[in-house]
Image 1: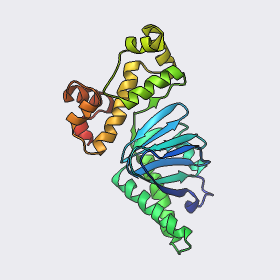
Image 2 (image 1 turned 90 degrees about the vertical axis):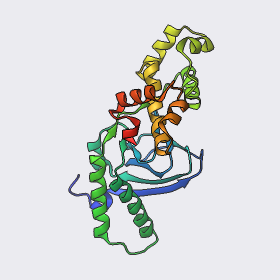
Image 3 (image 1 turned 45 degrees about the horizontal axis):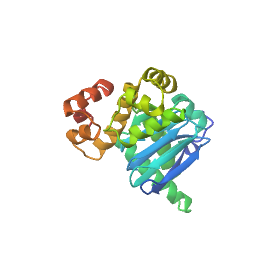
Length: 253
């Protein structure tokens, strides 16, 4: 961190509440943002990716990255805007992190104090400075999750991806999709790889993991989740989940 930067300038709180399906349209910040829903689940679109952020996970968004947000439930945001120079050490790309119980409580408390400060009430500057430093340290220590869903630009692929999101348990093979959009399965396979950097199957698995995290946070059983995502049995779903995240859904819970 820049030694000339006052601790109380390091982080700005940003809290708000949103109803189901409420949209926050595309915007960006001069600071980096730790976008955290302390209650509920959100979906975030950046230029090249879509993110599903379940409870106890947060999205790191570097400065000036345009993003929009959709509330997938009743949502309470307790986010943090990080000073640009300090945020540089976190890199130039968005990524998902696990929010520790400590960071969860710190973000809620910090936003509460930040709101009280704006009303003119006297808040200890030493307390605020300590919170800034501890929150930033916790963010840097957080474990990142290797979950990202590249979003295509080709309108035909966008339509396919939107349908897969809407009906994750009704998966069609590439031959069926190719017939629907009037091309060959081989051409569609190349398009998917070129636009997303992933195979069709790998993209679907990333989507399933992101959706599963939200369902795990909601308390759904593994059988319910595997059924909702179109798996023939819970074992097949659990094996896929563990292959990507290194833990079974039960362990992750």
